Length: 259
Image (cartoon, rainbow, N blue to C red):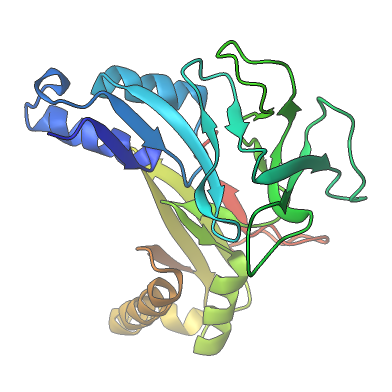
């Protein structure tokens, strides 16, 4: 019987809810440990997972450009993720000036690989915002610890473990050509799973009495976006000027998961 589960934290909560609905007690399982990553999650979410699944939940951090999961991991004290410094050199820089920041400051995490072959990386920008702790951990390890990432320095969002860029959606909409150049990505969490709803402005023509035109365009956009992103999405077609305009950088994403 399995004693360890590895998945995204949101999916772990989804499984816990499904178990409760099915009348399955976590005590009836042999699970003891959970290893979760691929998306941001809070300490409150960790506590909920541990309570609902009756396991110890550990965080894991990684980047596909470096090695995937396993660049840094929790120890039993769950007070920061130990970076494997025998393979990677972590630094914190300002995402604006790219200059190194003083110890303890929050900034963008960059990595230099030591043992990676074929594709070595020098001060690779992860776009993840965090800080490093060089104090010795209670577990006895002296490897530097990184805090949970507080956000990103670019527009990328992580939905169900998949990296999503607003520019990907924009490219799809531009290819379709039947929409306005105004769209909005609304990220939320329902039943412990991340959801993505995309608002797209279209001509008043589509809001005529012929509902079939509206449904047809909705399905067309949904299929194109899902094929590009690799995740399911909801498409909502809205009338012109529904989406708020901005004089500066357009606001393309509303993330309600941490609100």
